[in-house]
Image 1 (cartoon, helix red, strand yellow):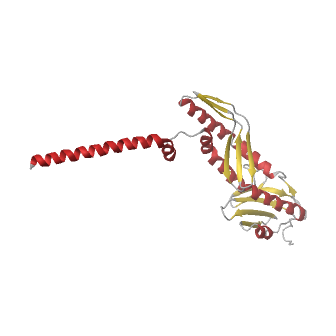
Image 2: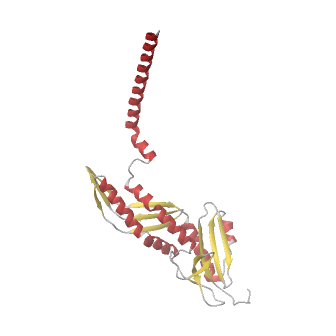
Image 3: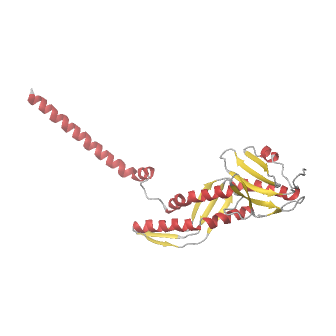
Length: 259
């Protein structure tokens, strides 16, 4: 009986080993065939230069956009009013009573683009330095030429283009003329509405906000009157909570008087 049991155990062990060997072979074939997809899914594959730059600087750009959106379009406002512990820049202003305001940033969109470009230059240098070092460690010859940074506010997105031609050589050569970081953001639309409100402030001294909300159903426009005649406008996208706020002082009345 013991010998029979022993032979059955040995056969069972051999069968298990055969099954395990087959599984190992199959797993090896699957890994060989699908390693790029698996590595990418698990974050093991090396990033492409474009993905590297996007992940390196994307959050920095988003932070600057959020900050300037709460400050009237400037990262370091020079002419502002404090509202809710926040510096809010005057985009239309007069220091006189009974007079309409004068535009302070007639090219608001271009001003915002310039603000972002200047603020991310140091971070861009760090990111491209890291990219260069990363590929050198992997045995590449790296030829990187640093050029201009261009930020564009476009409908429903913000595109930052780095004109930094890059050539990577290791056996063959990979060439990149530029790098683009794309953010889904509707600042372009909010700035367009801001310009419309500012034109009304400069012409008539006030803007009726309900017309914008009747036309743009996803938009919330708040108008906060201050004691010195300043009006804080707050534009909020109800879908994503993106916000742009700014200040205007137009047709102000002296204390004790009313319209």
